[in-house]
Length: 266
Length: 251
Image 1 (cartoon, each protein chain N blue to C red):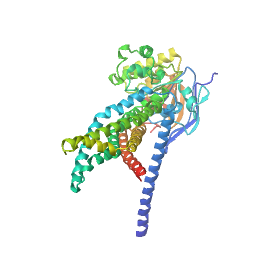
Image 2 (cartoon, chains in turn purple, orange):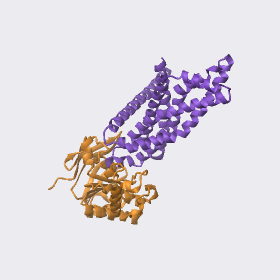
Image 3 (spheres, rainbow over the protein chains, first blue to last red):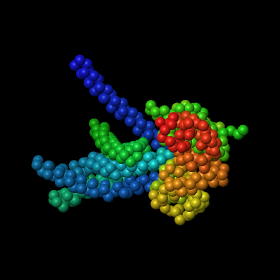
Image 4 (cartoon, each protein chain N blue to C red):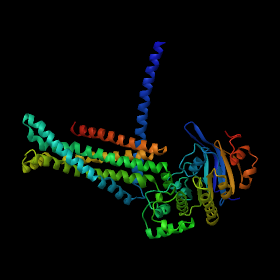
């Protein structure tokens, strides 16, 4: 009797694991098809350049304040932390190098990615989700306008274009933040700080930051659009879609960041 | 006898374990106004969505002007869809666009082209549904429910479709506003010579706007006939439904 019960519980445990795994694979499959479908349709006419520019403004321009703020403060804090830790073993001269590396390769792209995901993936999921539950997406289709070309394509490409620009700006400001703390608080020489920073920085670092940014931009818009497009069940459904979009975008940004870093330096 | 404008043969659709449509047969003649009545959840909306190609039926055939809709895609589907206009139950106006761009959306396909000419077209179509040009620049959220419905109607007729679907056109409106919409539908069908298919559970509306009425029950058409026979159909299901009785064969 006991053995049967243990066997049953064990079986249920594996069934549970199997169900989660199958669910995950099915979602990956659906998201991949959604992405391919979007790219295929967005690359064939009719095109909507106006919508693309509108989205670049939404995603890029209006994200600037929060991105700038994050970058400057993080750069400054990083410089202070590096100085404090480095001075314990007479290595405080590493401040410019670590700030540059840390900001350009990791913190710049990841922080911008997370900030924009919070701002943009949520907005996309909420907007498309509301359009779905109020039948605006069906209305659009019956008016012979493809939502993939009109709504989703421009969001996806605008995000892939805007993120690298935002990351470049964030990297500059992050380094500036570190510079300000180092020169005006920690007593570094301004010229030599900049020279060391410049020497540490290589074209590859910037290239990697831009690749990461492009990938993050893709995931942010993809998650926002995918979950918004599939929303159902009224206001609660839109809420679910928004939350899932942001959480999935966060997870994908962190995962792909690690993957790119490990692949590049492995 | 001419070819039917819309012909459904044995159309079935199941969502998960729920059978929504179970072999629907229906034909609508050119220039005819047909109403489908039935309870909420009886598959009325799904029938419309199948004809529009928004939902793909599991089996059966749907022909529009003799052309098969099931399985059509790309250019073919687009050409068939160009024949349809649809008035959505909740209006489904694009809330990010002003009224005039909503009305002309089917013509511009979302692009901002020839704004002066499009505004003129929007004005003409709004006039047809009894609205004046003062609302051209307003957003849909600034309009009342009845006005939204009329703007949605103007949007549906602006591309001059051959067939118009009305999805519960009077739901959510007071009886007077509902009758205004009914009158508009009747005049549009007569003036524009379109074929109309309306789904509704408003009997007054069905009697006013339809030439023929069909009743959908448990995924099948269980009765069809001219609108004058609606109240003496001799069918207990139809009787219960049109008289709105809680007791009867429908539970």
